[in-house]
Image (cartoon, rainbow, N blue to C red):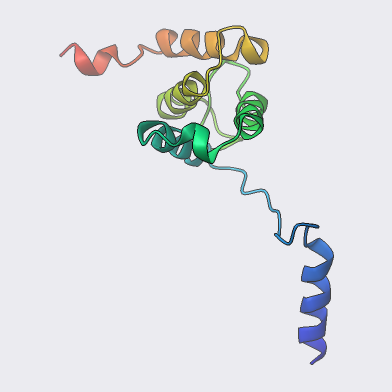
Length: 124
């Protein structure tokens, strides 16, 4: 019973006022773009995500952009083409312009071009 009481005390302490248990599922930088792209393709982006949520997603992506302008597979990883393109596309779908997030899109675009973009796959 002591273990159960401790568990209940712990979870009631970290529960938010609205009843959910918040948690940062931070790390993988390819999951959030999957959500954004799927919602966009299905026409549900603005239905499921409020403008405030979209703003916070952009802010999250800006905060995890690497200094070289790209994104990795996870928040501490080196920039990869896969991670950079997914996050670049997500920001574009969320309506971000080149100047947003201290020019995050411009930096990502430059990183993509400097690393041969996708042209090496389509020009064979």
